Picture 1 (cartoon, rainbow, N blue to C red):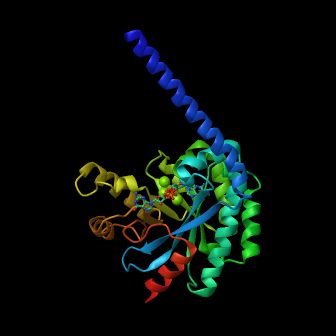
Picture 2 (picture 1 turned 90 degrees about the vertical axis):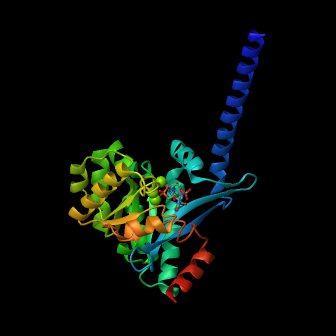
Picture 3 (picture 1 turned 120 degrees about the vertical axis):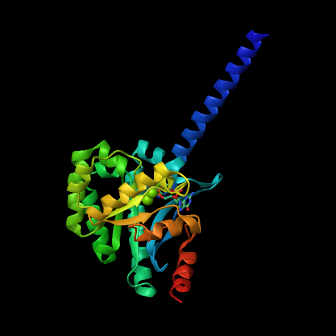
Length: 279
Ligand code: C2E
Ligand code: MG
Ligand code: MG
Ligand code: MG
């Protein structure tokens, strides 16, 4: 009886693993073709001024509409793109498309719009990246200070020296730098002090239970204090409730982003959002 059960369990386990591996392999192969098939598009999530509630800009978020599987989450396909090196090609497409779109919005309806674009730690290993970004800025003719690049805190820790040098080069171009998912890594405060960064994006996990968890509150306060001392801008990510917003408005935090204001939007939806927010 137990032997049979063991057998069954084992068989179930292998089948599951096989499905898993082949599903990943399939995604990997499809990812190679996704660029040519135009299966990628960008969403834009509004970032608001915390006090006035006016729109400041957006974060651009990559989407993959798979021809058979439908929409696939970036947390599922970005790791595959990183492992295969496809992230270099995809990331360049994201930057170019986002900057063209930014220019369009600046010219048509929102002259001082800011746009934030995510960079993968793998992209930061590419020595040619700074030049590509320079090219894209020239080609789209955007003011570099209206473009912000988001680098996760963990990517700084992973490859400190190279990333520090890279960030310095980016700053020379005049683009802004944000540390994304701040608080989830363990970057030394000394490193942070040395980096020419402009913005901290506080990870949404810290805001989940601020209103009843005292411990979280202390961590959050420390992050706001640090930002204030270093004169950095702060974006609170993942604001979903009025209570969270009320809390944030009493902190050193200039910008907010989250479902309370808007989900990530398509180009058409975001244009509408700009026009409505202006009124
Ligand atoms: P991220 O850069 O931290 O982006 C914020 C994520 O939080 C987005 O998920 C957004 O949809 C989600 N979000 C925003 N407001 C709320 C809220 O109020 N509540 C909740 N629960 N979630 C909220 P998304 O679009 O699924 O992206 C996940 C991650 O994938 C991003 O995290 C980023 O690390 C990565 N990613 C997305 N686009 C790109 C890209 O173009 N390049 C690279 N390298 N990574 C990207
Ligand atoms: Mg981000
Ligand atoms: Mg984030
Ligand atoms: Mg994140």
